[in-house]
Length: 461
Image 1 (tube, one colour):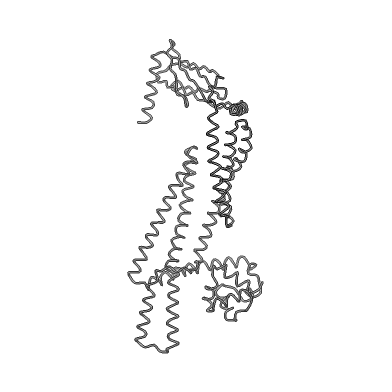
Image 2 (cartoon, rainbow, N blue to C red; image 1 turned 120 degrees about the vertical axis):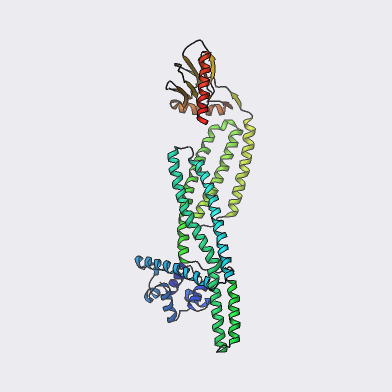
């Protein structure tokens, strides 16, 4: 490995431009460029200075591949760099505040407070949106499990929010103040030294003039310097945050790959409804539209993970095409659905339940209304008529009778075949059509209704 290659790798690993390295070494940018291209070599004092700045010895810098340096040594060097850079950040902050006027300090503090308030409000809004998303996704599961999931996600978000917020806050502070302060400080120093070399011993009037120039330049501390360098410890935090964000993006990509596979399967299954004509064509185009949008999302996530530049023009054309297909799909399906006929499901199964009347009896039926029919009997007779696709079940504990329905698992394939056949025949059926008739005396019917009303009042008040 040549010196030129090692020098280039060292500069990039420390997030420095050629101008910044040249500034530290006291040479021109062109000199650094020639060193890295192998056109010339640095003098020995510059080589020693490079070794001192980046913790390498001459043999490593001149002869070895810096990538194969002992890992323990390298990690120790990097750790020391992070510590040194952190203390350097604190030192620069103290130095900058010490030379600021009272007005500049107040302005700096208020600016940081506003930035902090903006970050807090931003993270609160994102957190509120995230909470709604979590409730929408996991709200239907068991409450205890939901609470655990929500607490874990909230803890992760708070920790990540603190890391990201502190990183952004410190990075803005460094970019807005410290980087420019460092450049101003060096400029005033260079001007002062150059003045001394040209004129020798300074007169009192010239010293006064230089002090005014320095004070004037110090007033420019608050101006952002665009050519800032990135702090080591901030760069480390940013890398950790980026890795975490990429991990979240990978999880999102996995999540979007599942509906993509489902859409491909649905596209194949859509050919089962080819006899529906326009409905099939509309559904086919709609699924293709959804596949295109899903693929665009997956491509965006993939490009972010691998840091690849996206083809924006192609993606924009694909997105517009998917929207056009979606519109055509909705229009074709709307035309095709008008040719469908609603047919009442006649194939009913009848179940009969007999229960005894008790003092506090309440009858509840899931998702259905009850038809009360007067009958001269002391018992309560419940007759349920439903399709073959469901099975009725009754739970009775002498005070509350609960009637519910579950899918008939033994006829799952028959149900699927019937639905496909009905759609191809352009028929729509209410497969969950259920009739519940309760036969009881007038007195018992009134008592059951009153018990139900009391139950609901106790529930909500």
